[in-house]
Image (cartoon, rainbow over all chains, first blue to last red; front, side, top):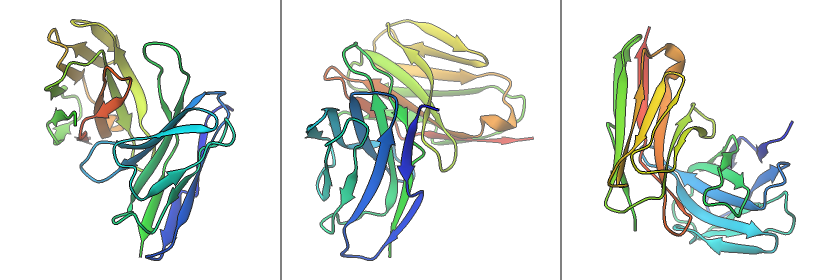
Length: 114
Length: 110
């Protein structure tokens, strides 16, 4: 089945450690996105990539890093510089080229920093 | 930055009742979208609106793109328990970025 997978579903990390969240899609989409969701707030864009080997910062990129070495994969690293990393992280993907390209979301990873 | 104000923040209703929620913005959007998110899952697109004044239905859901392009509403008729979840509006800005509202949490009592 085509879709977006994120792993792990739940992740615990000690303060001061870097952690990498996985996002894979087999929809053959060019564009991929990372969002952060906090309780009572909408989704906020962290990073996005419209093509392999290229990515742009979103609204809240500080303390995060990404890579896009393969079309199918867009991992997000939450670094120790991110001051408040506990949140629900959502990955999405879409086609490109039209006025609007629907973003399909993965199931999310809940990160808790202890 | 751009912001969407979504209201109400939460709703507690009886099964069978109709529901209405809306989003307003100080900016113009080219496209309005409505998503539903079940607990612990990613959002799923319910309805997309592409033209000012457009009224679109998807089963018991109806959404409208405001004439001013700065607002949108979503109605759910005859609510059922599986309607429970968080509903988000999102606007596509001139640069192609999605801006999300804060969400409306819907609880339905059987």
